[in-house]
Length: 366
View 1: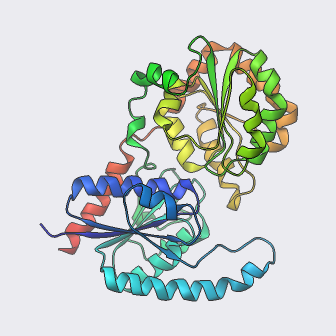
View 2: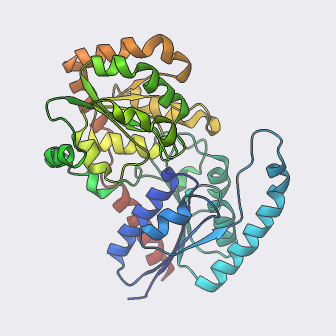
């Protein structure tokens, strides 16, 4: 069997990095002798997270355009030229069989160069509203693996494959891990656990909400496991002094914290939404309004429309949060309905299905 070579590119946030790593891990199982190379953006979190997962990575000097006029935007043409040039060198030297892009700044120039070199490319789009980079790249890509319905207005219809988003495989069987999770995170087994997820960097408005309503939350009888993000840990770690409050910057065992949790308050990034579908927890989504095309609100709405979660916009938190949270806590049948409905939307075989599409491309190339 030929020793295949794969380049994967995605980064900037965990939502782009972890799907790429999940795809690489599945490809490695399918093709044990394959070679892998990741390409990311210099100074972004993929430069740490990918080597930690056991893969080599090359960095490009690239960043996205800011919404307002800044000196960084003036540098963008130079960074793009530099990244295209380095991408050419990487592809010429590594000679990949397939290039896979999961979104983020670096995947743009790399897949553009791969397309020009007539190397098959696969895009994995996590969101219900695609970003401009993937829309452009899809014109030349062989396959676009998506996680939401009705994306024909963004991508060529004949290239779309509905796979779902890659998720950590250790989330597939969390029901058996509850006792282990409670022990691992030193939680009180007699209390319900409220899990707060703000994404890898943290979510300022969510953190402000939890700080403001902490006494109310504790009075409702829950213990709070609060992932505030690395940008905010110094500011909020003082609340670890409270009984029944655990503040952390990052969670290393997501399988165990999901297993131990009863209710979740989360941002609505694509990876978080996919994971929450899989683990089936009653969830309140607070989407970030500060992302391109407001795609987090669209991600959350796709779940809410199927009665699988509750959505509160940031500008409605002061007015609605207490009432909605109290109603959810008091209504066991609502919690059960949310669990059942969100689980119906899970795609547990997403990673395998994406790798199946990549395998078909390899066979076609023979």
